[in-house]
Length: 160
Image (cartoon, rainbow, N blue to C red; front, top):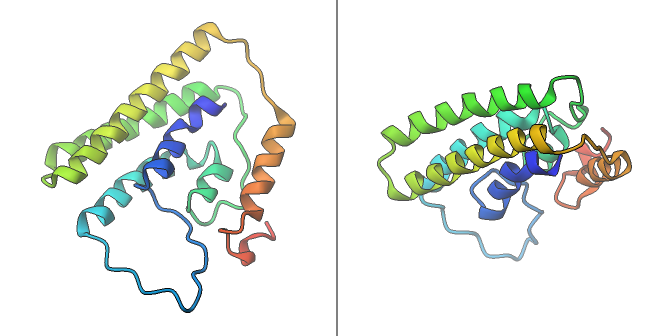
C-alpha cells in the first residue's frame, strides 16, 4: 500500500501541496506573501491529492484536504485497477496543464507530478505482476488515528 502513497509523500516533501500549518505563536513575525506561482503549483498538487483521496483519505487529510476525516481506506475489490484509472486521468489533466503553463517553476513542479504519477502507475503494474497481496491492518489503523491526532490537525477535526 505504501507505493500508492508515494505521490502524496512527494507532494508533502517538496512542499508543493497544500499542508496544514500549526498555529504560530502570536509573537511570530508575519510571513511575506508567497509568489503567485506557488499558489498555482499548490492547485496542481491538490488535483493529484484529490484524485487519490478516495483511496487513502487518512493520508490526504493529513496532507491538508478537509472533509475526509470520517472516511476510511478503500480496500474494495479491484483497488489497483480503480487507482490506476484515477491516476491515468489525473496524469492527462496534469499534462494538459503542463502544455499551457508558462512559468518555469510551475512547469518544473508539473513535470515532477507527472513523473511521479507515471512512477506510481508503473509501481501498481509491477505490484500486480510480482507481489503477493499483503496488508498490514494494525499499521493502517495506527496511521489513520495518528493522522487525526497530529498536532498540526485542528482539534475540531479530532472527533472523527
